[in-house]
Image 1: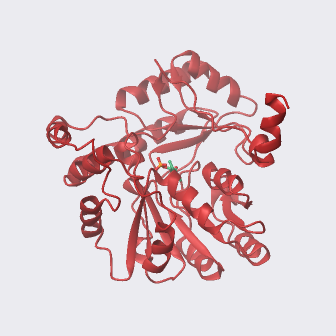
Image 2: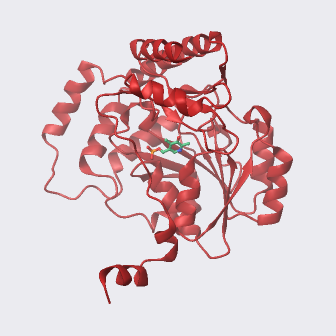
Length: 358
Ligand SMILES: *Cc1c(COP(=O)(O)O)cnc(C)c1O
């Protein structure tokens, strides 16, 4: 048997048919494609971080429970009795963990579309079926379509991103509660963008036995650390924890996250600045003719350019050294581009380049 036939003989057909997740090379570019916080940590915090990391016991395995970090976060969140928390190496890992826990040939993961792509990618990687329910006009939740799809497909898992990526908006709270009430399985409210949003579902935790809340430190300013967490009823979290790799959160991440979270005001003030920049960028984009920009509660803006121009404008920006995200080709997002809010200088460079291209 030659090498190629051996590979085709053994790898899962689904894997052979799938594409790898593409991350563009951003070296030398103004990077406004991945919802990162554009600011470095303040000097005082960096000093504390270095002090703490100096003694990091890299010869030892990490604490499998990440207890110090865990206790800090539980106290900060004021997690009620009966609720628990599980950490992931980014929330991507938690999405994978949920798929591993719920997988089965006839099992469905359901989410509004356009939405976060990893829900579909990881469901399908584990052999589950993904059902996307199109959002309504203005990217609002189509409640009756959602309820109908839930009744028909009986999903094991429903994802609701709040705010939604890549559209940036919050969904109607009552519609979400109706969906949680109607879902036969788990509902995960994904609050990756909570640092930039005035609204949260945290207050509803514990009121539904099937509601989990997922968060991440990535968009807040620690994308490089890879730390996400899932909150919810202890019974669910304990079962999920059986599947978690024991040392999934490394020593450096546990220490660094703790040091930064001990001073929450630092990242909070950066988030406020990003929200102010978002409002200025929103207004500036709105003044450009031919562009329609969608309101956002996250650290990015989705905008639509004149029909047929999406690819050209994305490419033009790239040629001027600015990387954003081209969403043209995603159903419902024809000629849509997504820009992450950067520093005031980065946003100005982006706007200048965009004006030149238009
Ligand atoms: C970015 C993002 C995530 C994944 O974040 P991690 O970096 O893996 O923690 C999850 N959900 C949504 C909606 C996102 O936009």
